[in-house]
Image 1 (cartoon, rainbow, N blue to C red):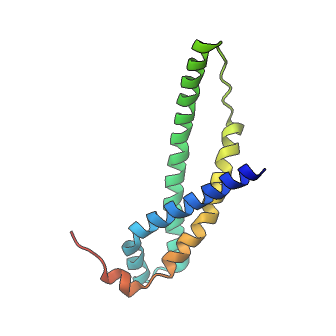
Image 2: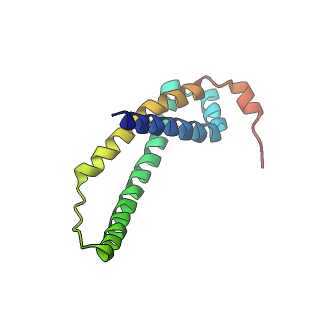
Image 3: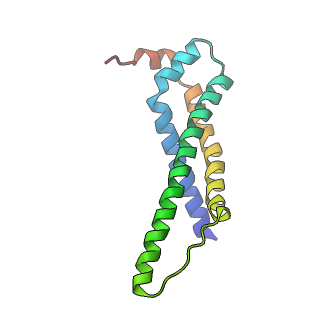
Length: 130
C-alpha cells in the first residue's frame, strides 16, 4: 500500500543522494577523463562499474548482517518464549535486493547526468593539491 510506496520513494531518494555525493567527490577525475577525450558512454560505464562494485559489496555485507541479526533476535526470543528455527531463503533476500538494484539503475541517471553536464574548466580549475 502507501507505506511500501513511501519506503520505495525514500530508498530511491537516499540512493540519489549517495550517488551524487560519490560522484561529486570524484568530479575532478571524471572531468580529467572528459578533457582527455573519453566519451559520455565510456564515463557512464566507468561510473556504473564503480557503483556496481559498491552495491554488490554492500549487498554482500547485508547478507552477513541479516544472518547475524536473525540469529541474535532468535536467541533473544528463545530466552523469553521458545526456540524458533531459522528459515533464511535466497528468495527472501532477492525480494529485497532486486528493488535495490532497480532503484540503483534509476538513481544513477540523475547523478551521471549531473556529471556529464559539469563545466570542465570550472571543475578542473578548482582542483586542490595536497
